[in-house]
Image (tube, one colour):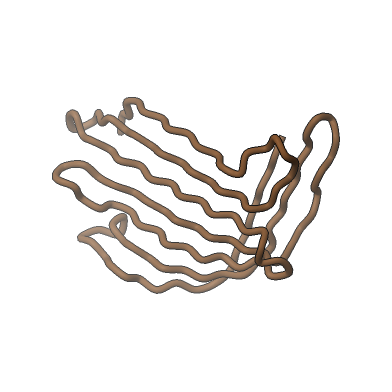
Amino acid sequence: MTIISELFVGSGLNLWRGDSRGEFLDFQLGLGPSYKYDFIDFEQRHNQIDPALAIILSGRGFSIGKAKLNQSLVIVPPLNDFNNYVITFDTNLSIPLSEEWSLSNRLFLRYRNELVFEANPNWEFFFTTGFEYKF
């Protein structure tokens, strides 16, 4: 089991704003704690909180024809060890099928530079697809 939890406070710069409040592209910088917990092979490997820097590029509501694209790219290096960073990329493409229904496709990638143990991959990847209904 691996848990990575982060909470940051900082400022951001709006790079693009669409027609509604849900359409934007922001660049953000923040500081805060990053908590890492690893319990692998019945052994606790990490249980620590480190001060960290967050570099975030977050976008919502990009139109690609009638489809909507939401993306985020987050880079989090601990301030006490820049070699043990985490990079997260999350993208969601929603293709409308009707007024209420859409086909949603999500790709999530996370790279953790810190090697917890040899058999643990640095990359985490998942892809989901399915139907969404908006009330």
